[in-house]
Image 1: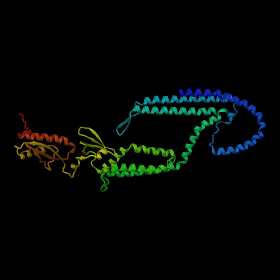
Image 2: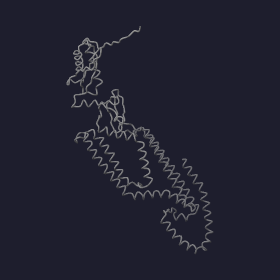
Image 3: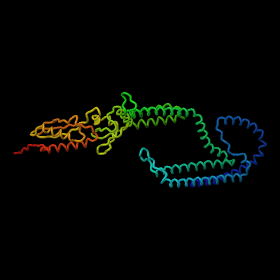
Image 4: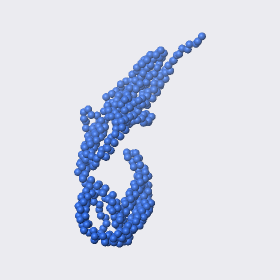
Length: 456
């Protein structure tokens, strides 16, 4: 209502000015009548020359529409003033009605927010709650209300000014502020219809090409379409790369057809965006390129158990920017692709493929020389065979890795293909080794000796 009060104040302050100006015009018209007869001949000649000049100016200048009806000229000043006050009163009532309708709409929106408006969820992630959506809609409605009210006020003032001779030109100027931009937009839109149609055709062709590429990518990923030398895990990233390149090519082709693309302002904005993107995305571009290299290197795939930077876990996400691991302790570790590309990667799943014997897990024990090494070998092999998820074929084997002064070091090696259960397999293997030595009456504790020299 504050805008309405300001509007009414401005209009009523201008009303006396309009009244006085009109009175002066009435008095001036009487004096002008006496002078018209004397200057009639001169005006005919001057008007002829002025009409020629006016025609030249009119052909080069925009036409300002005449908003004053001939019937207005026949009305008395008080009648015009009455019409102006009626227009002001009608607009005031209309503004009040608009504000009332928006208030009712806000009340209904708050009432419906509890049941009818649901949270915005994308891929099981809540983006906006119901109340946040309501707040966004309320802000939009408030802005729309202000725009409608401002448009009403802007149209009312020229309508009132057009009723009086003194302010008629001002009314035409104010209306021109609205009509000229609208006219320019409409004429520009009509002139750019062929270019807009060309852009639409380019976008439609691009979308159908992408649909065809997606069809091939999905079939390759599912194994329905086999291309020699092209692995199934390459299908999705290759499609994404082609999608980006194709859209970039589409933008380059459609750019000349954009309205205003040849203007310096448009070109300056494009260069500015390109510079900002180049300066701010150096690391991002590096990760992107590293992600492409890693994709086609195939060091691991989703679900593999890997070791990167002394962190062991399962690959749960691999994209063009980062790789995420989930450790056995349910910890999530994120590596940028630049780090991955410069690190040593151990993939435990590659040794458990169908054409491989399995991943070798091992454990080391030390024992004194008084016990025959054959006995130690038998105990360790039997412990490995008794461990769940350890393969019987190939059979476990023992390596002696060290002969110390007081004991020998024995390493039991066994095969497994249950890579995801390695920590549990190690636990069961250690338990079986302890049980095997205990049942044989042997103590796993190795003797340690040290010489202490006493001073004299």
